[in-house]
Image (cartoon, rainbow, N blue to C red; front, side, top):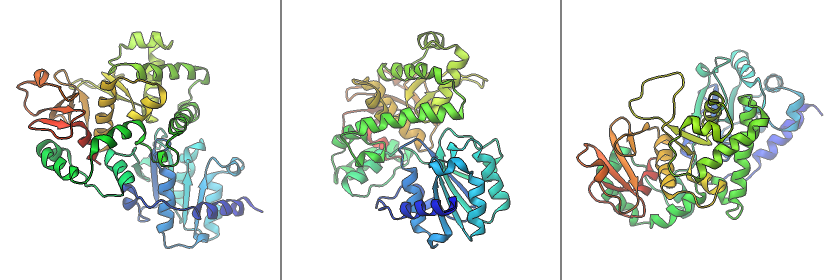
Length: 397
């Protein structure tokens, strides 16, 4: 049996899997008008499920579609390009490539397929993978699949539909929005669950072992994806894990780069390189200070783990203030907003709005008399004036 025939067998098995009813918003944006589509994101956010749902929506027969997991052992003896040529010659129309970054020269193969073969390709891969080297950035339409928002988590949990709200709606009309949501659910209960395990859809499979699965996804991202994509010395993995441990246990982290480099036993240049790799891999987020000019090497003002679930997976008893800030930063960035650390208040959003994040008793003292400033408070269901419930920012996407 040829490799293409064996791959077809696995493709049929993949297609026969039961598809989840819930559909992420990104699915509605995918279509075959674009010859080359890429979906990137962290491990565990649902890229493979999205590919299966997309595959099932196509009006093509099984001989015209081929799903390949590029990390399958069969792919070790061939290449994406060779499979694509054989598939095209057999009348194939849609090639679906999962975990494409596993092949080191995947970008060159995708470019050649785009240039010379009359097939559509949709691929998924690590958020850290590079598309620029083979000039794929102008050929491929790339989408990023984020972690679940609180709104999406609520839809999973309750089977109810909830509206998305713009930042401007939340800032100007939060009391009315909250009243509408409270008529359906009590959000604070779900919010605490979301902080622990709601960012990744695989929590539905096994909540009891969610931490172990997330830890495995983090380790695979660091130990395999980032090591290969960024040519990281495997001997330095211990140092990288030490960075993550420090971030997990600290209050909102404002790094002294010299002290941090000494603590994790890395020179400053290597430390910056590893931090950039961890951010590209959706393991951490680095926030700049507002108003700082452009420079070749930017010192981050604050560093967080990418989302609250990662804190719970890596350490127990994470700082409450850090979890709050991690949540709002992830919700804002995942919905396309810019966020920077501010000298007055915690953050400035879209260069326009100052926010101070805290508990339910947080006062306006630090942002008093500042125009367009807001308190974002945890542990409250309903806000008033310029004091807004933290959980409501989970409805941005």
